[in-house]
Every structure is written in structure tokens, then in C-alpha cells.
Length: 125
Ligand code: HEM
Image (tube, rainbow, N blue to C red; front, top):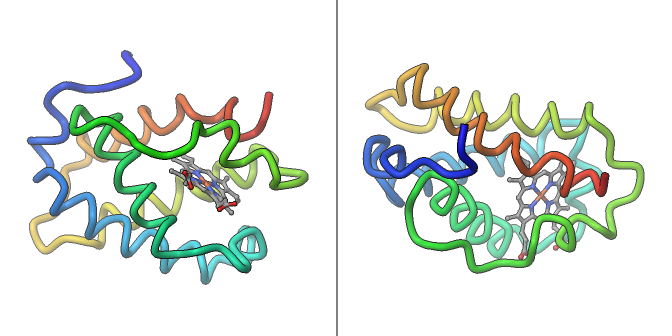
């Protein structure tokens, strides 16, 4: 699998769909006790803009315009695989629930797979 997908962005409905997913995703992250302490004092509007840009970019939309995944997560101490897994679980649920016209299972798996490429950078490995 490549680290981007040329068609996925259009197929799932572009930035409109991805923004809806990110809205849902962020509200889930803030409620999830496994990870929400990491999001204390974070500028959630910026986070949403950046996550939207990142997910647009990996799915084949416009280029990402934020910090590298490695530097964005560098200050977060003790980040482990279980935290990354919790993030992906929330992203999958958000994709399931965010839109009235559901994102297909295949499309969800593709996006999760693309997000998976960020694991080593996010965890600083
Ligand atoms: C698929 C996995 C992940 C993706 C795609 C992702 C994406 C992003 C993006 C795009 C940003 C914004 C960068 C910027 O401001 O320029 C960010 C920041 C942040 N992420 Fe992640 N992230 C992931 C995993 C995680 C995990 C596992 C945690 C912690 C549990 C986390 C916590 C944070 C926090 C707290 C910030 C804000 C950092 C700051 O403003 O100082 N992220 N993430």
C-alpha cells in the first residue's frame, strides 16, 4: 500500500466528508479517558484544521500544511502503541457515524491503513 491514495479523497466526498469525520473524531478523542489527558490545553480548532488537512492529503486531496507528525507529537510523553490504537479506533467509529451516507467498510479500511503510516513518527520510534 502506498502512503497516499489518489482516488479515496474524491470517492468518500472530499473535504466536506473529511471535515464531518474530524468534527466527530475530535469530540470522541476529548471524551475518551484512555487518551484525553493528552488533549488538555490543546487548541482544538487548530487541531481539527490540521487533522482535516492531514487526512485530505493522505487520501489524495490537497497537500498537508501542518507540522511533521514527528514534531507535532514530540512533546507528548510516554505515547505508546495503545494510544495510537485508541486514536485509530476512534477514527474508524467517527467514519462510521459522521455522515448520513455511510463511508463504506473498504474506504474506512483504506483510510485507517494510510493513517497507520504515521505510527512510528507519532510515537517517536
Ligand atoms: C493516526 C494518528 C494521528 C494523527 C493522524 C494525528 C494528527 C495530528 C495532527 C495533524 C496534528 C496537528 C499538527 C500541527 O499542529 O501542525 C496533531 C497534533 C496533536 N496530536 Fe495527533 N495525531 C495522531 C495520533 C495522536 C496520538 C496517539 C495522540 C495522543 C494520544 C495525539 C495527540 C495530539 C496532540 C495532543 C496534538 C497537539 C499538539 C500541540 O498542539 O502541541 N495524536 N496530531
